Length: 346
Image 1 (cartoon, one colour):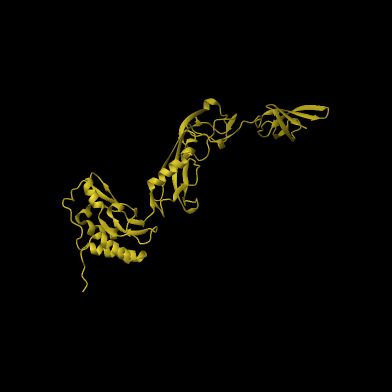
Image 2 (tube, rainbow, N blue to C red):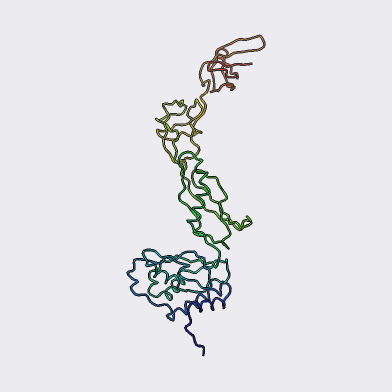
């Protein structure tokens, strides 16, 4: 008959860790550890039901020794007495994963069972994640670390934007494991634009080689004063200063680049309501000659020069060739715009 001696939990965990190898064996060791804990190896703590603190289990953790302790996979929440947490943090739970640098997961039911046996009544104060992922050795970066890295990397790009730029609505992995602390995570893209931006991360080795890549995203808000219509303007209206105002807008929600307020004279290619953004695509140059206007048509050939009246059949800018109808012969010709009232045929 085999007798079970009530040796210390740390010693028992170390024995179990050496007896198992590989992911399936590690899970078996975990199950065995839970079973052994059921013999009452952890003292019950009285008065925990009304405690003003809780124990939050992490969703990812790195362990260092051969046995997982509570302090490696959890953190206190609320005003827990320091001595109480020191005692709880030292509680041994189960053998560490056998293979360093390889994450392994513990689902919530198994985690609850293990802590129920290890902590007795105190287990009722635990707050659980859906799954706990463990890695022996290495390091783990959490979402907050990735967010801080993205902010540091893209701050110069945000500072170069017009107005006030900031990032929000991050969509990042909850955690990233590193095989060893010397590995480094970098953000490869250093440019940003208003709106949703893809963040490309890379895990780099000490020699600079890329181990793996992963992505996330963040939304960039850019608040700036942009040209808007001071009053409703119609298509083909000339954009004069009294028809333009500046309104603070979030550039992230503009469908295309807004007019920068330069150049001109301009006319509208579509109607724009009051306080609506004037986009660059809404503008076209004011023509030197307008369609339907009467112009002087100059005929020049060598020493011969004559002129007649004509009607512009299309808008035209300076130097552009437009169709013109000779008002005497009613024939259509093509002539180059010289100024607002003159076209030339050569």
